[in-house]
Length: 442
Image (cartoon, rainbow, N blue to C red; front, side, top):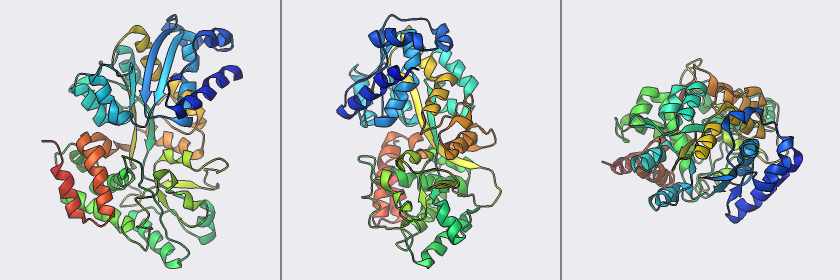
């Protein structure tokens, strides 16, 4: 892509996002002016569409929206499809209403499988085209495909991904104080107590504030403990309600997380709910915190000039298993690309966004990863993201999608989030899980 084309795409996109306006891909005069600078070989089989418009919406905004748009820019130029993207943080709460009124975009980038199921169940979604399904069968594991297969019908391809359960730390502090990366949950607790006993600062820092989604970072803690302590089969039973939310094994996970999150000797319990999740780990940089539990995507929050590497300013290790050397078990998340209507141009865009070409371009833009097995992990923008792609591509990894994202919306994006807030502000574990269980749709 030429420098001119890149500027024309990215700078207006950032301005439009801030204003809440539609974000456009390269079309019209821009496409004609710069097409000679673009290698259209990867897009020859798609054909051309004479400026036909395809609208896309999702929760991706600001810098990440710029990177997303840049990832389909060459495709848009070569196929002459006018791709208009609108990013909004309210996508999850408004998309069903828009679909009901016939005002949904052509394509939605949906961050929760539970929301995909809701939209499909209400008849708002088109089944995925055969070309998209073929790409998913080739480039993703069956687990990823099943997350958007509802009652036997496949609705959409995965896009980006993340691995949760990372624990961020300062390599310099660990080296200076002789801390070792824990290999078991018991060792993680021992490390926590060691830091607390030294008295320089609290071991952990975190932030739970996220607007209407406040509390969601706490659900990630619970999910990690359910997977590690109870195992993947119990995890699956929990998210599908084959066992109740207040099952003793889930109570145990809450209590295990509570040993960290509700202990004022380990974390500032007074600021947890009011601290924005984006700022939750930044105290590591000034030496007033040692450990922060957050996903691989947290890397973008460290800011310019911060090196993410084993010998850098910050790095991360995965929350360890119960026993050292056990099977690698991780939770994670991602987005699903679905369609609210169909046309040849929409099919072309969906097919591109489900391809290894798109996934590779997006990873090269930086700050994220994909579980697409056609991506070269070495091209990720940091050693941590390279490791994350390798974990996602490893057939021996036990991967489970974020539990709250799989649960019905009344639970996963409502009572579970709210329950975390109540629990962290003094509620008992039993009252919390009982309340969430009572909210499960019958």
